[in-house]
Image (cartoon, rainbow, N blue to C red; front, side):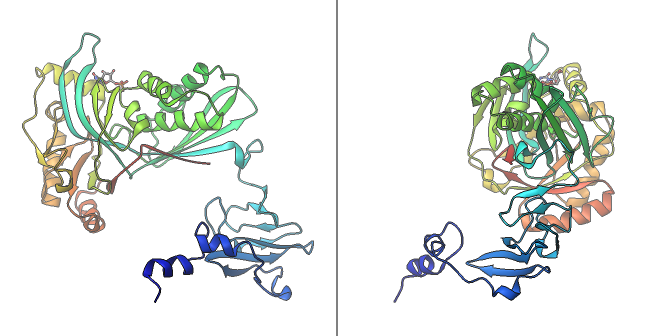
Length: 406
Ligand code: C5P
C-alpha cells in the first residue's frame, strides 16, 4: 500500500508540486475547438481555474480565471476584437496574458511600475517610560507587535514627471489629522530615501488608503512611513541596505524603525533600538476607537507634569505570551487619562461590554482588549460596536510590519 506521504506526492498536481511540474511538460487537452467562443467559459485543469475564450480576431486565449487587479472572475468579462476585458475595472488582456489597457489608471501609469505595500499598525503590549532625556524625548522599554487589522494600503508608482514625491490620500480614515502633503510621514520617508540615494530627480506618486485611525495610538503614520520606505526602495531599485533604511526610519519618527522590522520586538532608546523577539502570531485583540483623538507630544507632556508616573494598572497577558510577558501595562495610560478624562469613562464602558480588562494603545485614544480565542472575535466585535456605537475592530498579531507586492 502507498504511504500517505507518497499518495500525497503522486496525487497533488497544482503548480509547484513535483507531479504538477512533471505533468506540465506535456500537452493537455483543455477543450474542443468549438468550445472557445466569444462567450468566455470556465475550465479547470491540473488544479488551476482558467478561462477560455475566442476574441473578435479569432485568437483563442486561455488565462487564469481571476483578474490580477482585484481578483474578479474573468469569465464574467467580455471578449473584444483583441483580447478579453475584465467586467470589474475594465482591464483588457491578450491571449498571452499581457495587460493591454487599464481604463481607470492615469495615462502615465503602467502595472509593472507599481509597488503595493500593506502597512500594519503596531501595538505596545508593555510600555514603560523610563524618564525624560536631555533632548526632550523619553527613554522607553516597550514590547511591540504588529497587528493585521485595520491596515493601510500604499501604492507607489514611478511617474516620468515631475520629479520628487506626489501624494494622494484616501480611504475611510482621512481627515484633518492626516495631511495629504509634504507633512505626511509617508511623503517625508519617501523623500528622505530618494535624497539619500541621489534619486530625487525621479518621480514617485504615492497613493495612500487610510484605515488605521490617526491619533489612536496604533502608529498609523509610522506604518505608512515604513511602507513608503520599503515600497520606494523596491520601485526604484534603490541601493540602500536594511540598516540604512532603519537609520532613515528613525529620522522620520520614533515608531518607524519598529514598523519597518515588524513582527514583535523590544523597543528601547527613544524607539530606534529594536531587538526582535519570538511572539506567536494569531494573538487576538479587540480594538475600540473612541470618537476623540490624542496627540502623542501632549501625552508625554502630561506624563512629565504628573512627575513620571509608573502605571500600576496591569492587564493579564494572553496565555501564549507567557514566556515573554505576564502582564500588559502602559505608563502613558495614567497620563493620557489625566489629560482626557473621557478616556476613563470609555474604558469603563468597554470593560463592561466585554467583561474583560482593557489597555490604552500607545498614547491612545484606542483601547485594546486581549481575547483568548480568535474565533470569539466576530461575535464580540459585533456586540461591543452595537453597545458602544464606535468603530470596533477584531485583529490578530502578524509577523510583519509591511507586506510588499507588485
Ligand atoms: O519621534 P516622533 O516624531 O514620532 O515623536 C513625536 C513626539 O512624541 C516627539 O516630538 C516627542 O514629543 C514625543 N516622544 C517622546 N519620546 C519618545 C518618542 C516620542 O517624548 N521616545
